Image (tube, helix red, strand yellow):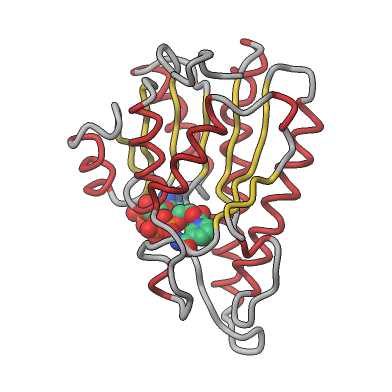
Length: 232
Ligand SMILES: NC(=O)c1ccc[n+]([C@@H]2O[C@H](COP(=O)([O-])OP(=O)(O)OC[C@H]3O[C@@H](n4cnc5c(N)ncnc54)[C@H](OP(=O)(O)O)[C@@H]3O)[C@@H](O)[C@H]2O)c1
């Protein structure tokens, strides 16, 4: 477990991508509430700055999860200001909808770059430190879309199915090292992203954040490799 027996994360630090709004911002607030010192990361500097200014995070860094240099800079800034990273939550994500015959190949690549390759770049950045300390938790927000097919959702769903496969493989690579890896798959959450779809919200971002907080601090180590379904 990364947290104390009471589920607290005092003395721990976390990086939350997509932390400027929606689920990522709620996760940052939840981890902060549990005592962690959190860095929020997204492209919109004004949004991550706003989360930090309102007390939802200790540090805000602007950048793009699909750009390796930005991810390396994120890790370096986090370590310089807050110390080694104990918990990574990859909540950054984008949705581009469209039938396969009309979806722009550039949009397909962009969705995979942000949602899936971003997770790979982030894990590469934080893993050596976690392994060296024998402790860490790598979490990523997948989706109900990692469990089903959706018309006009091929790129997004492929990225999320891929994210679950990536996390399960990484969990095997780090088994026994003290590092655990999990995905969390919410159903419809009332955020700007869901507003792009015809689907109604089933829950609020804070509902998902409580599950992520539990995964970060309290979930048994033996759950490494699992995908936690937050839908019914
Ligand atoms: N809402 C749902 O129903 C739902 C359900 C299941 C899973 N999810 C997943 O939950 C996660 C959060 O989604 P949300 O609903 O909270 O959406 P959201 O409100 O649109 O927030 C997405 C966040 O990701 C950031 N982001 C996007 N592209 C980025 C990039 N290239 N680099 C860094 N940050 C980037 C955004 O900031 P910038 O635009 O400023 O970069 C924003 O902070 C996503 O992975 C999404 O797929 C959502």
